[in-house]
Length: 232
Image (cartoon, rainbow, N blue to C red; front, side):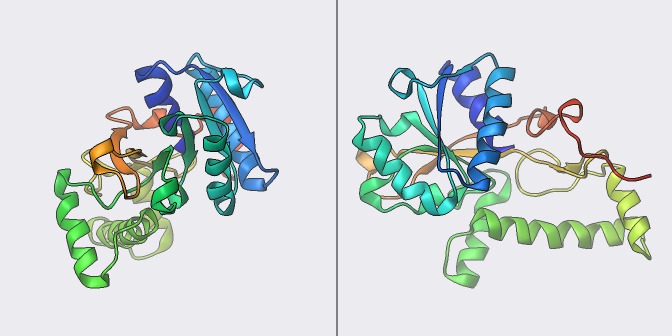
């Protein structure tokens, strides 16, 4: 889902079609690279081995390797907005090395669709910004609680059957959240955070775009490309 969010913005909207993937040999890096190769190809881009000629350098690294990966790209002359990665590790870079476009599930600066109120409540309660992990924990409890009430479910099978029927849930993301029946993935918009404007420098990447829109099945592995199947 993260890599699809990146390619939707960077290839389809910004026409940055030549990608280089820089990995670190980690399992997470290999997973990111495989997903990126599928997603880039599906959207008409190419993955090149020539990092210097690429429009975008994607860091396919473990979260602990993000800082070093960004530093290496910058030292090699890469523009801050021509580095990409997944997850919120890129939002925790030191201010002097803040760079890259990062696909995330939530951002503490979101304001639309009551996100500002949710972020504000979280900050007042915990004196910290709401991260994507925090949002996911909140959403999980909210969705299960609502499903129990709405379905009148008395056991796990009934709860699963209700969620598989794709009832809409509100996650303060603008579009209703639903579950795909075939793999139980949560359909949801994602966000891209990128370098701040020059006059606002000195902080972590700001939220710059939301992706997914109404076609939330465009984010995530398609059924035809997946080996995920539920046992009968």
